[in-house]
Length: 147
Length: 147
Image 1 (cartoon, rainbow over the protein chains, first blue to last red):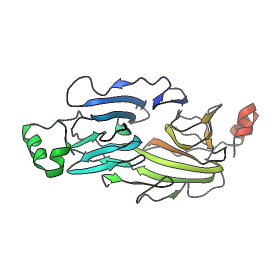
Image 2 (image 1 turned 135 degrees about the horizontal axis):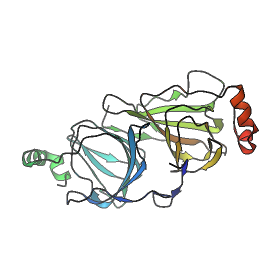
Image 3 (image 1 turned 90 degrees about the vertical axis):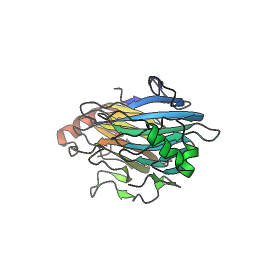
Image 4 (image 1 turned 135 degrees about the vertical axis):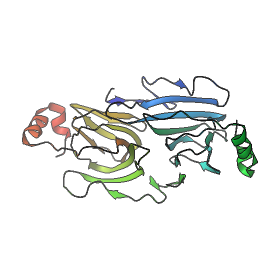
């Protein structure tokens, strides 16, 4: 890896590819992924930058591994467990193990955030019918989530 | 850990203490440390925020573990190996294993950066007399470093 990766306009980095959020699916909307620091033998974690366009959202999911998130662009909201949080630049979000979460760019600007994860991690799980029904039944949560 | 930690003015976070950079020493100057995400059984890494006041600098050191750095405030310069890099907001800096490095707030604004490291890591090493002499003998590096 080069010692310095220059930041370009518009939350892009010199030589860092802009990737699809996930390979396929209809459970997310207008979200991109850039891997800023890849894990390796001497770094057990990865730092990624995700950006959601206005109106878009990440997948509603949970997993055993943790998410440590820092907002670095725009604004929006997220669900963590059964709470919805307003998000502004430099806010920190901690998603515990096996906790339902979803990020949405709810305003007129994109929502961009760093997400720190272990390099070795389990695959996310989406809500089954029962969990989806339970989430939908929660007053604020039910209106917030996008499945 | 709380799900949301609110960002306050001036690169402070609600409930996150502002710590000394290191316990003691004269090999650094006007630099503070905040631990944004602490490692734990399910996260093998830590995310810290360091801020250097104008004219200040981090310790010139090297270690086996990697540093993955993202500038989020102000500007400055850093040494990585035998190269000096100008730093602007959102630039990424990668410090390989056993590579001399030092960050300096060379301008009239502070230099603030995120630094991602493994939770389990070796202690940094400072240059001995021989290494210091070798570094001082390098044209640009010799003028840049602060011992």
